Length: 488
Ligand SMILES: Nc1nc2c(ncn2[C@@H]2O[C@H](COP(=O)(O)OP(=O)(O)OP(=O)(O)O)[C@@H](O)[C@H]2O)c(=O)[nH]1
Ligand SMILES: [Mg+2]
Image 1 (tube, rainbow, N blue to C red):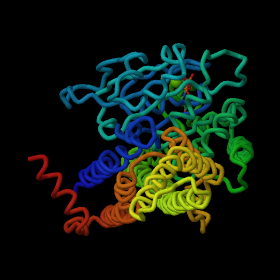
Image 2: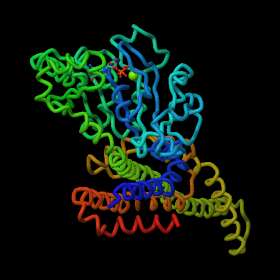
Image 3: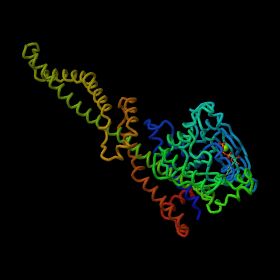
Image 4: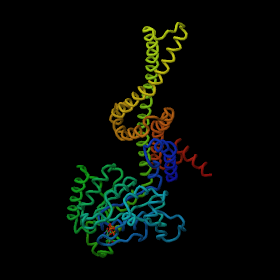
């Protein structure tokens, strides 16, 4: 069965949900300044990070099946390179670099999810490029080769903030490979900063794969164990965790033979007893589209939850304002009537209003009440409404029940956005519009995300057992059916 088609169908469905239900609300109410799908609509992304000379480019070339990236000892490549598929070529042609685009073009083209990197400046733009390669490996994903992490930032001023760039790319990547080599097993200063400051904010387990590369260069098994121990120690310092993540032990037989000669490699007897997990690594990378689906599903869940909480805050504010206004109208009417009647009675008591006709008296009292109400409306009520607005801004947490930690967390992430919107609009926005928007995003949060997970579970079952693929369940059938109809 064609899993890729299912994955693609689910991906389109998720994107459609974001584009049509979440983004319009997010943009209208200032939850986000750009459409939410901006960073997730492109292809699945695999970010390759690591020490300089750890073999990032050699590994990428191996995946691609051609020497597209420059390799070499010592810091070789100081650019971030996006490697993506070019489908204009004849599949029978040998793998080659078909087209190259510079950073400026890439940062300004809305087709790519890199516009947010513009903030890193001209120097970064000069170190950013895209290469289109006709390698089948890139059919379902794009790779990002990165400049190696250095020992000390002062060793070479990059002219842009490397950690921030890595952080931004890590945010949109579906899988991150972090390569080390035996010579500098996690001892690089930039590796510490980048991994500690950018990666831990994301879930380490499901998006980061650690690789100890070039293990053929260890003199013996003892040497390898020593290096492995050092790397584990450094990783636990970086991640702040005691449990050691899975580390792939790999080497490139070709690069090893080229740099050290085939005899030197075969002299390393211990290599025979170790599985070179390069193939497993390649398979993990090829799973990037599946990871992108998880990434997307989590994205939809997180944003629909937050956005729904955000809208709930605005809705509650608006409802409280409506009730406050009703109260103010009722108080205003009552006080104005009392004031009108009181004034007429007072004037009569002091003989200042010699009108004998009760109808005329009523009219005078009514007229005065109307004047008082007008005054109330343009002064007191306005002032009280201003006070109401300020007090709600000061006690934002009263806008929503925060009964669980999940609710507290989601509120925490949108609280300031609610304050910003209320301040900007002065709290004057139509209640019906907010109600409608809230219903839209709440429906995605309550039902949409459940359906997505059900469809993904179905997909997982299909992938686990190919026999079941002959009869996809209702969610996938519906999705794939829908797409096929749309395609025809
Ligand atoms: N012995 C051995 N050499 C390797 C292996 N992988 C790569 N090399 C060699 O190591 C050197 C550095 O490899 P690159 O792929 O350029 O490393 P990089 O991480 O891209 O380096 P920068 O781009 O400078 O950050 C090259 O000369 C490769 O041929 C390996 O597994 N074993
Ligand atoms: Mg390189």
